[in-house]
Image (cartoon, rainbow, N blue to C red):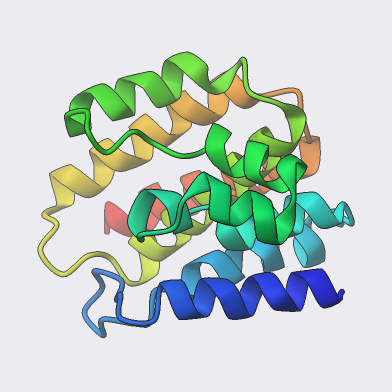
Length: 177
């Protein structure tokens, strides 16, 4: 548990000035903590590497964190998982989204668990507290794109997949009201 707490403190520091895009501009750290919560408390995942990687999953992509820094502090296994779920921000957004779908089936089991939790949390957030400037069409497109990613991940954890399906259906219903 000490390593997980260290990862939370590290991620909190790295994301300290970042906010989510919702109306409240909630602290960004809430997102990686939500992933770890979904994995541990909703899906029963106990693999420390997966939980730590969930907390750290956006540090390389969205902060000045390097893979070397993560490897030094949290080890190669955690860093490898984080790297598998990290988009190359040098690529155009549409290309990054296409590559997520294309690569989803080929990432490790641990990375698939983190990716599933990320999509579950994102759908829940979009349904309940969406980005302030997103019109309905963009929200619906995100839901369908996330489903395409998750469809390529299927078979890794039926419980997480069911949580995604619930978030997808409930979110689509809420958005259509």
